[in-house]
Amino acid sequence: MKARLEEFDYHLPGDLIAQRPAESRDFSRMMVLDRKSGECRNCCFAQIIDILGKGDCLVINDSRVIPARLLAAKETGGHVEMLLLKKVDGSPHRWEVLLKPGGRVSPGMRFRLGEDAWAEAVERAGEKKWVVDFYLKIEFTDFVERYGRVPLPPYIRRNRNSEEPLELLDRMRYQTVYARVPGSVAAPTAGLHFSEGVMEKIAAAGVAIAPVTLHVGYGTFRPIESGFVEDHVMEEEYFELSDESAEKINRAVRVVAVGTTSTRVLESVSDEKGRVKPTGGYTGLFIRPGYRFKRVDALLTNFHLPKSSLYVLACAFAGSDLIRKAYAKAIGDHYRFYSYGDCMLIL
Image (cartoon, rainbow, N blue to C red; front, side, top):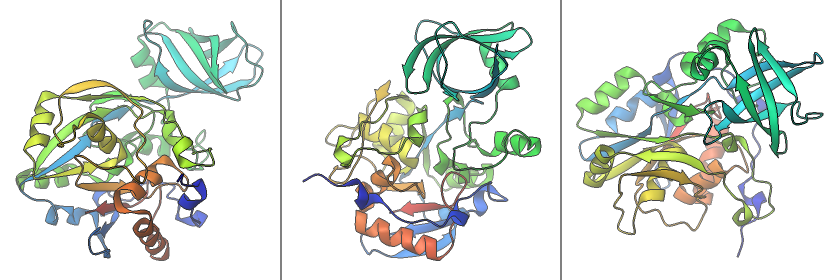
């Protein structure tokens, strides 16, 4: 029997949506949820070092968020916002982008990005999505780092065009401390809670740390629109798993995935015995209730939007009833929700 989307809905007061990061990364709150006992308890994220130990392997997503939001102007004078989605294979300066507003755009239309910098629409790729060619005087990556802005999620409702100090804060905090490989247009947010100090203490406790890479795409913001969850199709995202990380994961007694992105990598590459092999490619794995987890033993994750694939994954891992109980407690205890919010460790 198919699951109706309404089963994964809940009401969240708007004032619980975090609009900026916590004062310190590891001062976030963390709910510890025990799947066997059903116990939910509150603690500080920094206490994760007391829960992890020798034999554990912490799997982190080391993808780095690029400043993918570009402000442009049509030749007619109208302003346009571009969000870089993914590079089109075969051309270093051809990208699929989301245009806002996306109406009245046609092939050949040009957009001014600055002095001696412009883009040209090539073809439509979907609703508000276009393939564009960039014409720049400097390297594309240098241009984006210099002129791009942090691609914050739409539920962070700040006046992003006028808050330069917050733009500088976002460049630092909407990024994990271990981010290494550029390519994401959204942060793997469960990792935002780790500070350098916490990472050092985890390693000193004998916990293996295994980086994987999954470049988070715009699809992470896309709500499930089908009436039945099973009818939803995930957008594919590129991932890589190295030899070294695969070895650490296969030796582990307990695998603790940091975020839904690390979870999807692990479950995409695991065989029926839970063994992983180093590989790379694209995954469109959609984890929903009924899925049998092959390698993930514990999951650190933020509190997600209702009716989202991320919330559905949490329900698949812990059970829908237990997740509803945990979310109700989080709302009652005034946890901070979504990307800049608090987190939950599901054991």
